Image (cartoon, rainbow, N blue to C red; front, side, top):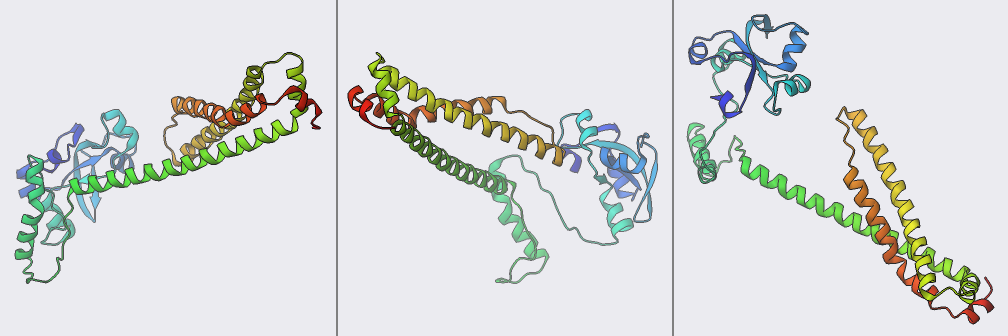
Length: 282
């Protein structure tokens, strides 16, 4: 039943059955990683190995339950070795108790009702008096998934907040730089206006400068991110994924941020009168 519950499939061979489990058979189903570690590239089916000094025969090769195909299993490498429960208790571990039990239900409602019922059964079997703490742990996968989901949402909110603060800080920096540029180029703006440039021309010029400045910064950040992604993937052995859509979105957001925070300096530059601007040193 464990293979069914864990949705483990076979790459080759067969699973052991109830008769072999009751008969303390020394048979094993090995993961692809374990088969490679034990026998190299040779076919493990029918081969023997020792576990804690006890000889076992390989009757099956299991596909890692975290992978979707035998090909992926070969690449991932499941290093688990499965043997019959009674064989493990009597021949390998030499104990008469279990340290873990897996339960499966047919619905979510039944799953929610299981923990208190299991706790009551275990407290009776462990002879725990009322008020005495449990000497066991019950893990509810639904509660674990909910906690993981909540943690993920909190982390996303934290990352989003940090990113928002960084964007706002960068936008303020762009605005400050553009305001300084307008102040230092007052005579240039006056000269352009005197030669026939309209307020709109001046505004578009400074908006383009702000967009170019922020766009170059976004491009530099994207390249650094890609380099960091490649380095981390290489060091950790992960498959390399290039987030082109995310990079394009980041560049577009950078340009939009430059236009937004460059709007005030551009309006200020466009509002300068030519005669006054020409008389201003700078």
